[in-house]
Amino acid sequence: MPTLVADAVVIGGGHHGLVAAAVLADAGWDVCVLESADVVGGAIRSAELHPGFTADLFSAFYPLSAASPVLRALELERHGLRWAHAPTVLAHPPRPDGAPAAVLHRDRARTAAGLAEHHPGDGEAWLRLCSQWDAVGEAVLRTLFTAFPPVRGPVQLLRRIGTAEALRLARFLALPAGRMGEELFASEAARLLLAGNAVHGDTPPDATVSGVFGWLLAMLGQQYGFPVPVGGSGELAAALGRRAAAAGADVRTGEHVERIEVRGGRVAAVHTATGLTVRVRRAVIADVAAPALYRDLLAPEVLPRRLHTDLERFVWDTPVVKVNWALAGPIPWRSPGVAGAGTVHVGADGRGLARWSADIETGTLPRSPFLLLGQMTTADPSRSPAGTESAWAYTHLPRGVTDDGSADDLAGRVDAVLEEFAPGFGDRVLGRTVQGPRDLQAADPNLVAGAVNGGTAQLFQQLVFRPVPGLGRSETVIGGLYLGSASAHPGGGVHGVCGWLAARAALGEHGAFGGLRRRVTSAALELLYRDPPGRA
Image 1 (tube, rainbow, N blue to C red):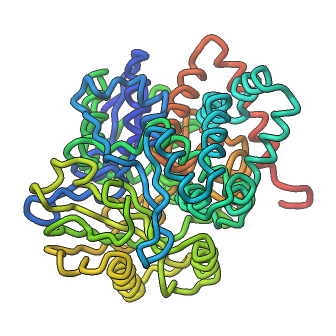
Image 2 (image 1 turned 180 degrees about the horizontal axis):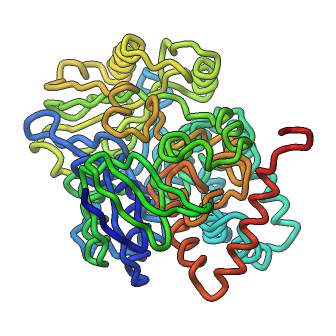
């Protein structure tokens, strides 16, 4: 059987894994990437589902990528990546009767002017919110995009705004999305820009800190837009693969990892289904879901019992149902301002969002689902022939509901919502494909039961609780093994930070203070996972 030796093995060629591979290879490490699928990218992939129409199979718009210092540092444009923007960033029509939509432009003055038409004071309120972002946004992103516990971001914030304002900001960031909107704006339209973005993060709009997701995405959209890769999301994955290879990483597709070998408490080798063995000198970085790493790739006896118990409480985000369409023409929206938006939030106003979220959380199949919709040709004309539209929409099933019948039923309700907001939509459909939870997982095993976020983003499974109560870092209980997927801090989204943090942790373990770092980490993990008194 073939055997290789590498400084580091990266399990999974999703974007986090490719980032980790590039960072390690840049540092001079000999890196081997093992990806199960025939192409790299994980949940960044596109395909021709209808002749001449390119569809993004999973993720599609990338504000976090545009904002991520990790991805910007990789200079992917030098490896073939090009970005495109829709004329407007986002629109949210409140009702199907043609009422004016809330519209987010890349120009804050245009956004404010549009909101002022809904209520005279909301334009100025939006500009104040943008000024707040100017003051704190960089520090907030630094805090989110660094290992836990963050230090530099909060220190930078305190220096900039002072303790009193920092306390007010902390309260603001803890608000539910609905309450945040009520405190900031008088009109429903402006509030919808926050509430609609909040549900991207798998948090109910009435949940504590749900507002921070809406605020963050709205401000990122205002500053960076919601860009898309020219030619399809697969072009972003391909550029990442080329970047890792250019740094010297050996990227191998069609290599499904079956087992991580552990000796003396440290990673020793990785074994694949084809019979390949890769001996590991320094580190293994796992760009896989946390339950897959701990339950499937590692022998049960190498892990503390408490970790197994904690994993039983791991919560996935709610299952996704995605519908892709090839359309003979643009979507015939009733509401003005929606046609030019790349991203559209449709199907519910503020109260409707609360009802939809309640259905999801109480196990009820929503009668009228809320949709996140992408008008991809509007954003990137290369996606389909001139005068047509490549579009998709996704929504959620209740947690634990993944059967094909429910997915098909919900997909039919998605079509009905669009027909209501855009009469004649169905007449323009040339091709239609449904991706239910089982389809998503079959295409990418990390999308367990259609969960696309690597685990819920609700507060009880964020920060030091992600993926289980611990350090909130990429280090694991096995020496030299690091979790570098969306199941680790800071969680879902295409930002590359999970892979970058794992790579930096591995480099740090072998740096000038590596011995001290290993001892501190080992002592902390021993305290966390020591069996409680009285247990054998």
